[in-house]
Structure formats: structure tokens, C-alpha cells
Amino acid sequence: MAGSRRRPRLRWGPVIAVVVAAVLGGVVGGLIVEATRSHDDAGGATDAACAATPIADRDLPSVVTIKVAGAGGQGTGSGSIIDTEGHVLTNNHVIASAASGGRVEVVFNDGETTAATIVGRDPSTDLAVLRISGSAALHPIVLAATEEVRIGAPVIALGAPLGLSNTVTSGIVSAIDRNVSVPGTGSQGTALLVDAIQTDAAINPGNSGGALVDCAGRLVGVPSAGASVPNASGHAGAGSVGIGFAIPVDLARTVADEIIATGHAEHSYLGLQATLVQAPDGSVSGLQVVAVDPTGPAARAGIEPGDVITEVAGEAVTGADQLLALTLKQRAGAQVELEIERHGATQAVTVTLEKAP
Image (cartoon, rainbow, N blue to C red; front, side, top):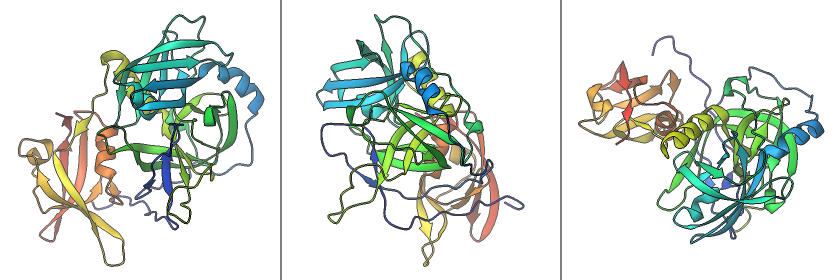
């Protein structure tokens, strides 16, 4: 697209495994981090740090430990109270083992324990909502806005790493706009953390579903995965290596609102399948369309098998997850511009997303 801005492509050096950060009673599978998107450093780095004590005093009553037992095993994770009606935001992988029958309990920071029910879950984005009842006054966490998150800004993670409730760790926003594939649950092979916030605040198993907050104590992200360097046997190493990922608050809020309203989240679709095209030097040159749903949005826009998508919404194609990320964060009715190459010619195509069937 003439005059469009291409963001620099990011390549990972050493192989890094990503594991979902929940204690699941066993070894958690890992995946390799593939393509990600970079983002300009709008905020700049800072040496300042949050005053952790007042933030902990304010936010720990809003962050709970989640204990799950079901057919899929036992597990521990974290969650954040998001309203006075008792809704708790967490990760799907934290509570998935009890989705087909089981027990979910929530432990408050003062030790009080109460039962919780699953309102709904969205495996594609790895988000879920619980509801608690029979408790005294609740303390909902305050939500920030994703656009306020800046690279280099101090953040604090609250949760229950390794089942240790009321744990607080601190760090900075290391990067934003990462698309990170993580292990899925059940028939869901993988989930995608879309536009994830990368942080060096320690994210360990059990932190999943908890809170990543700014210096005002507002929720900016849902900690969901941590990276580790594979050991000699190729398995993920243990403990935090200073690379954790959190789902940005705007996406989490949208999915949670839909789950609370209808019991599930709705996503859009393009109606095409594409494979990554790489040059001999390993650089990415686009996504080649291999199949098109004849009744889907892509077909209506004139996209054909054999077309190579080179830009998505003004950004150069850098990885296979870009189209999936688009459908997870954009709702039906949104118009998206793709740049495609066909028979050596470049053209812009506008696709109107539709509700996924």
C-alpha cells in the first residue's frame, strides 16, 4: 500500500518456550514463540518504580486465588474481581479442567473461601469469567485502558505463583503488541494472546488470571504465560526468566463483557486459509491464500486462492498469526484493508468481517 508505514520485523534469537502460567498438577506443555509484532516506544524507558506497598494494600483484596478440581485434574491460578456482582476475570486454562463438571473455589486475600461457578469461557483468547456468591463486600479492581500502557512503565503483578497467595512482584513493561501462541485446552490446540504486554515482572505458574497493574493500581493486563529457555533435553526450564506475557485489558474487558451478557464471546472471521511465505534467507514475504470459503467475507471482497497477502490493516505481514489475531480483536462488521499481490500486481482489498459461523 503506497505510503503505508511498515513496522520493523522482529526475529527471536535463542529458542524460547512459552508455558501457560498456571499450576496444573504436572508438567505444563510448551510451545515455541514464533512471529510477533513490534511497537514503537512511545513512552520511553524509566528508572522510576511503583510504590508497591500502597498498591498491594489497595489491590490485593481485588485479587483472588482460584482452586480447581475436576475430571482434568487439580490446579491453582489467580483471578481479579471486576464488579460488585461477583464476577471474576481469569484465564480459561486455569478453570478448564472443571468445565465439564468439577469444583471451583475462590480464596480471598484474607483467607475466606467461597464456591464459584463458571459463567463462560473463551478458549481462543484464553479468557474466562467466574461468579462468586455468599461473600461479604467485594472490592472490584479498577480497569485502565490499553492505550495508556507505555514501554518502560513500571508495573506490578499480583497473584498466587506456585499457589502462594497474595504474592506481589514488580518490573516494567518490556514490550507491547506481542502475538504469542500458548498451549490450548481440550480440543483447542493453541490459544493466542493477542497484542500481549511483555513484562519482566516475575510471572510463574499460578500467576495466570491474576492482575498486572500500573502505578495507580489499575488493571492493565491479565498475566497468562511465562517464557523459559529449554534445557538440555529440550523441555522448558523452571522459573521466571524475566519474560512474561499478559492479555491487554481492553481485549479482556470486551471478552468478559460478552461472556457476562451471553455466556460466550463472539469472534469474527475472514473465510480464508493461508500459509506463510518465506524467502530463502528466512524473511517473511507474505501469506499465500490456499483456500477461500465461497460464501465468506474474503470471497465477497474478491480474494482468490493463490493471492499473497503482504499487509494486514496497514502493517507488513510478519507471521502466521496476524489474520487470527485480527479476527480475535475485531468484531463482525469491522472493515479491514488487506494488500495482496496477484500475478505480480499489487492491489488493496477491503474485507468486511462477519460473525464466525
